[in-house]
Amino acid sequence: MAFVKNYLLAVLCTVLFSTSICGSVSAETFYFMTVYGSQCVPPRGDRVHSFATFVKATGCGNEWSQYHLEVHTISWLPVTKEIKIWRLVPEEGDNFGLHETIRWAYEGDANIQKWGPYQVSCETFQRAVHRIGLLDADLIAYQAIDPVLRTEISNCIHAVSGVDPYDPRTRYPLIRVGYSASEHIAEVFLENGLILEAEANHQWLDRRLGLCRYPIETRKLKSPLIALGFGVTPRRPNASEFDDIKVHACPDFVIPAGCRHN
Image (cartoon, rainbow, N blue to C red; front, side, top):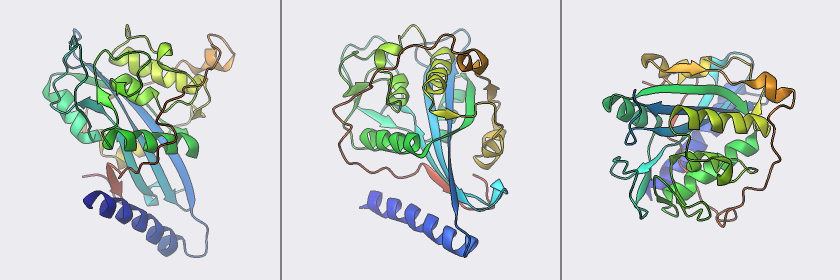
C-alpha cells in the first residue's frame, strides 16, 4: 500500500507542477542517465560496484533549475550490502538509493567515478524504470558472479546493462569490474545509440541531485572513435523472460522545481 501511495504521489506532483507552472504553455520532458563506478585502491572485491541514475525532468523553457526532477536509481547489491565474490548460490538482493549507495562506498574507503549525465530517450528511461520495478518486486536474485544465461539472477553490472535492448550479458565479461565495468556500460550505451549527444554538458543535474558535496570524478567517453565507426560490434537482441511483466517503480526521490536534493 505504501508503494502505491508513493507512486501515485510522484505522478500527482508531476501533473500539478506541469499545470501550475507552465500554465497554457506545454511542458517539456527530458531524460538523463549517469553511470557510476566505485572501487578501492588497490581494488577490493567487496567494494567494486556499478550503479546508475535515470532522471525525468519536466518543465518549461531553458532554465533547468525550474524543472521538476524524478530520480530513479539502479544500485543492485546483496540485501546485507556485503558482497561475497565467491558465493556459489544466489542470495536476496536489494536496490538501494543513490545517496545511500554513495555513502556505502565512501564508508568502505572506496572512490567513485561517473560517466554523465547524458541525455537519453524516453524509451531508455522507461526500460530503466521497468528494470527497477523487477528488482523491487524480488523477481531477480543477486549473485556477484552470475550465470550468463539465467537472467533471473544478476550482479550489479548486469542490473544496469539490462536496460540496453540490444547487447546481452556476453558483451560484459566479468574481467571488468568497478570503474572499467561502468565505463564499458556507458561506452556500449553510446555505441548502441542510447546516449544522445555525448559531448553535451549537463552538469547542472549534478548540482540539483546534491552530488557536488562528494569528491566524485567525472570521466569522459571515447566518443570520437565510436562516431567514426571504429570498434563497433554487431548488435544482438538482449531478451529476457521478464520483458512483458508489468511492474511499477517508485522514484528514489523527487526534487521540486527550484530545489536541490538535501
